[in-house]
Image (cartoon, rainbow, N blue to C red):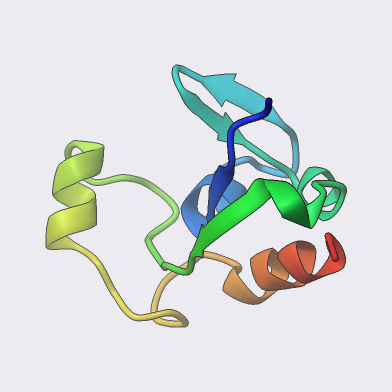
Length: 86
């Protein structure tokens, strides 16, 4: 049985419109997200960040977090892709 998914705006926005895998993370395009059946989407995380990570990913997440709309991620496009999945 497939595992439920956690989708985040960060992985969507760092994918550069193509899907790829890095370790245990999958970076998905809008087209990929829109094709995921909703029964597999357990949680989405709405976040914002700079285009480039500063320091380690953990340091960047903990020390440089901002509210949605204050940074470079395309949060609205991510939400449209999730909504298109059903």
